[in-house]
Length: 362
Image 1: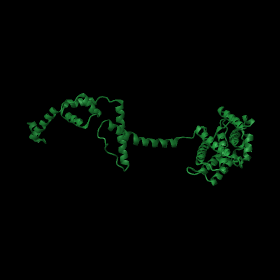
Image 2: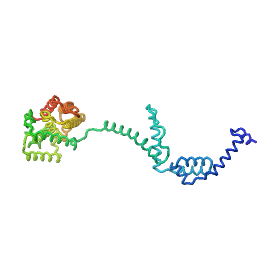
Image 3: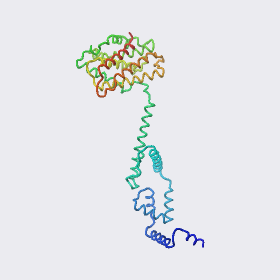
């Protein structure tokens, strides 16, 4: 009696209930139970839409197949499957948060309706690589720019290459017939001192670190000037062999950075005083070199500059040198499309000469 009342109070009429039971019977008779392989393909998403819908309809009507499907789904997934599931969850949460923050509408549905390998590749390309990858790249660039520091050693192959290339360009002017007196104009006062003091015989017993600093700088000036002031190739080669030996021996009395600084300053003065117009590439190299030297000496000031023999260099000298190099950097500008103007060349030559007067022992 109770069952009859429950049936009468249900939403179905008697005729509708029997019609539903008849349809269920016909459906079970018309659709055979899927095999274990079919259920596994259904779980892996390797089945076309029509057959998938038929199996889902059968699972709604067949308790045995439904429980078998649950048991297969309960098998512990592989590591790859769990990783894909994790990244799917991550991408869904990420895109949902982005869609709420930004006005544009995120794409709701993939054009590939099949849940097979093409859909997986589409999701990987769109959600897990492109957008998150771009965000991670931006964060990495910001991290590098805010945390990277100037190298402990300035003598990187790139910097040496740029200084050597600058010297070769200046040498090409000399080889084309440019008067050496033009390249050395206004430089005789400090050039004589550099020839006299650079790598002199008493360098092995320096008075202090500052003198060592100056001697290494003047040795660089001398090495650069020999490329223009003498045609004796053998003499120049012998001198550079001596310099190379000092570098490789890591002599604590030899400041390799200041040696290269002396070479660069000489090339810079010669280029600024020359009447020949140099290429924008040449000035771009000078800008990069000046930027590196500025960062280097500015860092030394912040960290209380110390030399290899633990003697302090004068802070006033370091600050003045850093300010001069910064001015050179500003006067060079960004000559991407055209060379440096003659007005700025004169300013560069003035600042470079001030560095020479400041560091050369008179």
